[in-house]
Image (tube, rainbow, N blue to C red):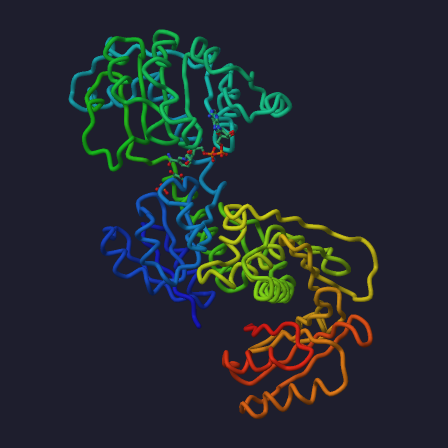
Length: 526
Ligand SMILES: NC(=O)c1ccc[n+]([C@@H]2O[C@H](COP(=O)([O-])OP(=O)(O)OC[C@H]3O[C@@H](n4cnc5c(N)ncnc54)[C@H](O)[C@@H]3O)[C@@H](O)[C@H]2O)c1
Ligand SMILES: O=C(O)[C@H](O)COP(=O)(O)O
């Protein structure tokens, strides 16, 4: 089926062109209201957005075909990540495509504040020629306080150092080595507030950063400080900023982002020393081309090849790696499904072991597929994206083990599941590097292709049993497609995996359970 993508925000046309080139159907509908989006989203497998589209839980509820949300940009605070993950939707962004552009916007605003450029421009164009009104400050030798020294913050730091400023940075995740590399002094927030002549914010909006420039923090700044925010509205208390501008504690403030956007009214508007831009940080033709190309490539790789890049809620998987991993994921999913169907919901732990060729691959997608198969036996909505989260919520102890040893098979995936009754494992390989095949079930060697409707039967190894089994199924009109046998020891426990054409009715399962020597019968579906 041809995947279908909706671009719901204004995006460089290169995004749509790439989707089309790669054989993906694409509709461009920027500026949709929430209800309009909810009305049409059902048909789409991919949603490409910038910051305007709000991907809320109710939008995701309506998005029954959606597999991926691609953010052409950095911030994903307009996407309900938890809701997307719970629904198995991958969320990816383009973390570097607009960093330089946004850093340049912060530097532009710093200059604009230092020399009051917007006011001077307005006054000059009004014919006033107020040469004595606009006395600026130099940047050279001033201290820039960086709150957040990630991708954008570190670019701002390098530009500021080029302007001969001193840069101090508050970022709990900044290592001393990285600070040294960037040429910045790592400080605590209080020291930054006390020392900085200019403060620029470059953190995401989180519970820890919301209101980081609160009324109290603003009161602790160096008098006459100038503040720039090109990160996210909500980092600064806007009402307190207005008061601090009015009192002169803050000499100037430039906001590109606001608590509520679009910001069409604000007490800050018209305040002397206040400059604003309408969330233009990423708005250069270069950045928009970058993020449009990147998001379209990433989403296409995912929808067409299963490649995962820059996902917020899933481990990465390159488009080159994805085809190699695909048969392993099918095998892992089948092994998980087999264990889940036989052992029910009482699973407490899962160990995924890989050896041979499988040990050379990224283990995360294999584990994700095992968990999706295992939990897919009792949940309709589980997939590779939400399986690890659901497993965590259920308190499953998940382990990955990679063996260097050479085994009997060139490649092997073993899934060992722990329940209150103990641990039991199933193992499988790939025939011809592509066809998943079970090779061991609960310690018994048995080869089977896990496909369609099957029966798992445990019985006492005794002559005549297979005949009785065949007769019972035959009398019920059930055709046996393949018959796979194994036994623990002669005359002991034997295992049969029987592929049948069509479902086996419960009454027939009961009949099979009544056959002499039968210990267990479980109908399976793959
Ligand atoms: N205005 C725009 O158009 C525009 C454009 C691009 C990005 N942004 C925003 O800019 C911000 C920064 O983007 P980035 O790419 O540099 O992100 P990033 O993840 O590379 O860097 C964020 C930094 O913030 C730090 N941080 C996290 N919590 C912190 C805390 N409590 N205190 C101090 N530092 C903390 C992190 O350690 C990290 O180094 C994001 O909010 C992003 O959405 C805005
Ligand atoms: O996080 C980002 O990338 C910026 O806020 C840019 O947002 P935009 O794509 O809406 O310009």
